[in-house]
Structure formats: structure tokens, C-alpha cells
Amino acid sequence: MTETSLSIEIIKTKDLASYVRRPGILTGSVVPICPLRAAAHAANPAASPDDPALIAAMRDDECVGYLGLMPGQLRVDGQIRKIFWYSTWYSAQGPEGKGVGGVLVHASLRLGLDLATTGLDPKTFDFFRGLRFKSLEPLRYLVLDFDRLDPLGLPWRVLQVLLRRRGIRSSAVTAVFRSFRGVAKRIAYALAAPGLSRVASGYVLKEISELPADATSGDPFPPVTFHRSAETVRWMLRYPWITDDVKQSTPRYEFSDYRELARFVVLEAGRSASGERLGYLVLSVCRDREGITIVRALDHFLQCDDRYRIVLVAVQRYALVYRADRVHVPEGCLPHLKELRWMPLVFRMQQREYFCYPARSRSVLGPELSRMSVQFCDGDTPFT
Image (cartoon, rainbow, N blue to C red; front, top):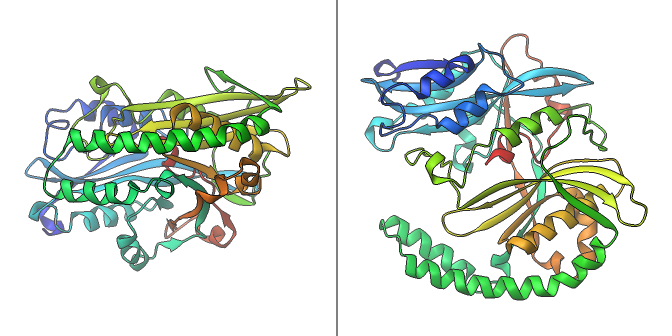
């Protein structure tokens, strides 16, 4: 597959709604975007109508690959500038998709934009570095994984891989492993409950329907960072990329917009003794088709010094409610883990890589890369 055999189509933000209604877009062998994402991108507060939102590689009027672009914001010494995140990158399997991924990336570079990406397959790191993408200091965050407690965790993952390679889906095998995992989780969370109750006794956490527009963070802004405002978070909450309603999903979409469970939780935090209002935080709860439940701490707008303690309490409370298999929290929660008894034994530090491509001219990103600080919700991580 060569670049000359392809046609490249750039879909602008203002055209997304009509694009997903185009005949064949949602029924082809490669579906470039789903209606949920199209609606979300069209409503992005950081986007302008003429911003590129999707690059589609077409061959004989059939999509054979695509690259999504999501406008975001860069904060440089208090000034807000626009950058673009890669939100999807996919090419068809087999001969028809050979070389398409590279063509799409080169097409994005010709747009002359400041680009950023994360969540890449490590096998592609050298490819991006070869194109002058610059790597940032990796983001460190904490992950609780019940595979560390479940003796069947590793064998289950290996068996899943083997069955998928053979095209086999066994509900009976899945049910057996879910049962064993459920027993391990019930025991572990029963042991954790007393410590969590003790730590949580100082706080009141109340679910609310929407994040207030005037929510502000207590964390000081680094000199250079990707900016995520209350307006951006409110947009995320109103326009989710995934759903637990199968009727709203797009089955053929490679990045899957369906989960067995998908919800955001917005909490108002306060002190139980004084009634002082401390601010707000946002969590996500997802359960995939394999029954793995993940609870993540996303954004927090807390005006207090013990904000990471509150984040940890909130996440662990919902992990207990949903019997989560995995929990993701910011690195700032690390000093407070020891208050939850055995929890430090099952949390591990994990890293996420970030790459940036400064535009060749008038780049606001290039001169600031050495001062860049990354945060847990940078990119499309909180949406998925």
C-alpha cells in the first residue's frame, strides 16, 4: 500500500455530525468514528469549527484507516494556547492496511499543528521518535491490581489471550474465573473496610449531578502544563465517549464505545466535624466485556492541603462498592496508602509515556518542552 494509492480526507469539527450520517461510514469494514465521539468532538470547548477533527484514509471509497485529532489547551506562564491530541490511530488489518498508519501520521504533520499523544503501543515509540516527536518526562501514577492477590489472575489472562487467538469466547470459562476473582475480592475488601472507615470518618462525600462551573483546583499550576479547566471537565461529563447502553453503541468501531458499566461520579467533599466545604472531585467507573471493573480518580477541585487523602478515600470507597479489580490514583496519594493497612502491598507504580511534535513554524509547544509537567488526565485518558 503506497501513499499514491490512497486519498486522504480531512474532516473538520463543524462537519462531524454530517460525516457520521454519510452512507457507509458506520457500516464499512473500518468505521472511522462513532456517533458518541463525533458529538463529543463537535462540542469540545477548545475546538473551533474549522479545526481538523479526523483524518481518514480512503481507497475505492472505503475507509482503510483513520487518525483522530482532539483540540486541547496548553498553559504557558498563565497564557492559554491551543494544541492537538491524537485521539485515535488505526489502520485496516491485512494487506489493505499496510503502510496506512504511517501515511496518516505524515498527513497530520503536514497540517502544521502542535501535536501531543499518549497511550501508544510501546512498539511504536521508535517510529514516533524517528519522526522528530519528543518524549516528555513519563507520568507516574498508582495502580491497585487484584491480580497480585488472586492466584488465578495470571493464568486467566494467559487463557484469555489463547482463546482470543483461536477465536473462542467461552462464557462458562469466564463465569468460573469471575467466581474465583469475586471470592478473592470479597475477602480483600472485607479486610480493607475497617481501615477505610477510620480514614474516611473525617470527611463527607456527597454525589452531585454536575460539576459547578466555578470549581477551582487547589493545586498550584506548573509553569508549563496541559490545561484542563472546569469547563473541559463539564464537557467530558455531558458528552461521554463510552456507554453502557448497547443501543447507543457502534459495534464495528475498533475503539469500542460500549462497556458493561460506564459512569462518571461527581462528588462534593466536606469535613464531617466542622461542615467545611472542601471542593469537588470526579471519578470514573467502568466494567469491560471481560468483567474487569476499574475505578479511576480523574479530576479534583479541592481547596485543602489533604486533597490527595480525600481522593484516595473517595476512590477506595467506590472500589469497595463496585468490588473493583483495578484502581488508578495520582502519585500524590502515595503518602496516604500506609493508612489503609495492607493496601500498599497491592498498589504498584506505573508510568505513561507522552510524545509531542512541535509545529515547524510559530510553535508554542517547542520552546517549552523542557519545562513541561504532565498530569493524570492529560489527553483522552479520562474519556476511555
